[in-house]
Length: 237
Image (cartoon, rainbow, N blue to C red):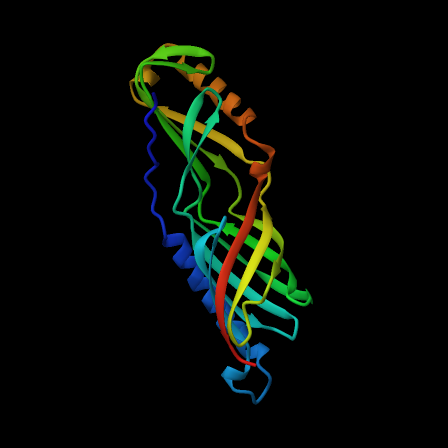
């Protein structure tokens, strides 16, 4: 029986940094989006709290026109899952933080289209501890050790989506998003530590295990589906 353990990583820093960058960007464009002579409260601003596959986080937005608004946000992903890759069962850790920045365009009623960029703070990582009789790369080993790795890919990707509701506008409301970040095909990296690495021909078995695990990566791994629902509050007319 395997014991699963999370890789030691710092969580929350990436999300905080993204939120700070988003706030600075929105403050920079706010004067340009406010009509000359109008007060700040006459422009449309909004802030939202949302949860979903892009984490639990915050969105901020500012209207650039009657149907167009700029929105940015970030969220933390405080969860993990388990999946079999190659011959092993791993605990899978998502990136600590994800964010999206882009333009929302209202097309009909509450329906809108979104285009922009998705950002992630780190690669997807995975880890397992092994002991006893273990099959690695088609060879059985009797030793203890640790296998860890990552699905390595880019940190920024194009993002497209559809949604309902706007984050900007006066008062309270709800909004929802369904979109996808297109990160491309990842490369799987795998390493080992512990007494098992001292056994004969282990490095060749580890490389075979890496190839087997890479073959098990689903095609959807090149994408990050974004489904979220939130509540928002806005000011302005």
